[in-house]
Amino acid sequence: MRTVLYPGSFDPVTNGHIDVIRRASAIFDRVVVAVAHNSEKNALFTTDERIELIRKACPELSNIEVSTFDGLMVDSLQKFQATAVIRGLRAVSDFEYEFQMALMNRGLNPRCETLFMMPSPEYSFVSSRLIKEIAKCGGSIGKFVPPCVEDAMRKKFAGMKI
Image 1 (cartoon, one colour):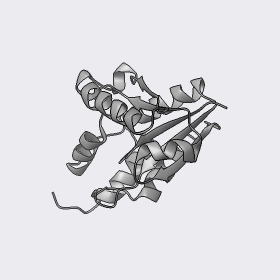
Image 2 (cartoon, rainbow, N blue to C red):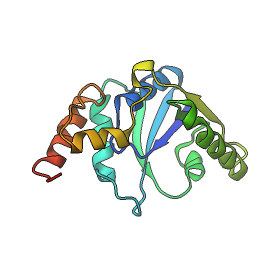
Image 3 (cartoon, rainbow, N blue to C red):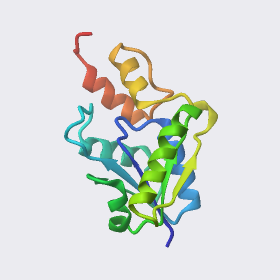
Image 4 (cartoon, helix red, strand yellow):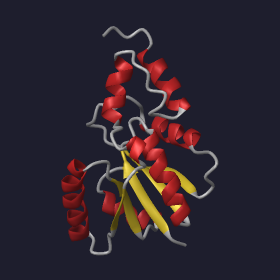
């Protein structure tokens, strides 16, 4: 069974993330979407909330597993029995960071292969950071995130003073 690991913070999961998950699920037998748990980051959603939002966003995909990891991502390869890591690249600006990370991961684990996948063009500018900023200011995010995420963000920001 060919398993790929798709790690990220997914705070929140966007349509760009879902696009990569769907396309990876067509290529690999099993896609493990691994939500990073980092207590030092000030995430909008808890790890459990992010896992649940990803599950709700793609219920039709029977070959995805949503889990969590902390520490080094390369250590999770063995835990999930993954043969590769998939990373999304939205723009050239993402490439330098992701390239360095891929080389560092291979330095830590020579069997760590990284595959880069570009989202569909309509999602190439979408980022979780921008989505949070738009939602915080009361803007419409419906075309950038799954409906379950839009609802969850509306609830998070309800009554918040900006």
